[in-house]
Length: 537
Image: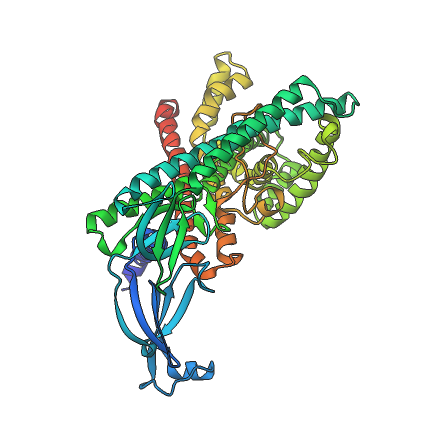
């Protein structure tokens, strides 16, 4: 046994076990998040419950969101009448009833003893809407241009309504946005010239175009107002749902397994491609995905050259003295500073000082409304670049230290200057280490939320940082972020139960985005490593 310990085998097995446990924990966490998030989009069965609550009999239709066994004693302490309950525990069901405008709450809690019967609701439809969440009911007829038609024509009616909504959205985001941009440019020109707003031919043309677009939008909305879906809810009341608000309809209890898989895929596609609705509790997260990826790419463009240049100076040019050691210690310690401190620094320095100065010099005609003197995606990228700068510096300097001095001496002996040696020999050989630093920087920056809350991220961004209006790239705009979306949905949502599955779905999506960015960087690093491997020999 003593020889076995002296051989070092126990420590090898201990290390292997620790690594294995870590991998199992990470994979288990990812599987849990993925299962909780992706199962949200599966078409869950809808049940009809006949309940008796204190002698009040009624029918309730909805999905079972959660089933939990609770103690009868706990219910009694909470003031629930448990006189009719036998045993020490009872099942409690959390049921999503939807129909937000018809009932007080989206969810209702029922005890097993309150349910007299439970069965699948035949031919029940789940109707996804722009407002008020999902509606559960039995479709009766489809009203098109004021005339009642069969439900067989509903699919075509939904396609026509979606097309009309697309036209309205296109008019708002392109034509109306372009007119507002030109009017804003005209107002700025008048302010720069010190003139009062006057009626000019250009302004009249823009206002006439705006009036024409407004008339076009009114005509399109009138088309939608004439179409509706007549539905019977769980109380037996006939409800008329405007087709303008209806996005999709499906019959979960009538779907086959293949149809459920297809529906599940479509719902995931909508989640990653649509804009959020209903205070982020409905719809998709495309603006948050775009904002996260764009901010990380912008941060990478900023931090990589800064970190590489700092590492080159420290390793190749700076003297080996106490001052250089002090700088290295400072760089290492910066990596341990809480991220919120960087957010405060970014708000005070980048936003108020740098941004305010830019506004006074270049955008004085727009003051007091700030352009760059307010949180935006540029300041967020710069703040995270400062936050991740120590990681890039340390990684790059370690890569430079691994390059043998003989390589540098050989290059200098052949007549190359120090700058040429660095550019043609040293940096290519150190590029895998640079990419490693960038990978670590991306992994940390993509998940940061605290500093972004101060320097640019918002709950709902009206527009993306990129559009078809000059200068096309608007770095002064605020943006949405997946990390902040998780925080907002999980802790700031007015409807906690409805938002809970979205926390898992968005978390899984954020992990997927980070893994995708890292895999891309790893692929580039491996390519560079193979490309410049011959220089190491």
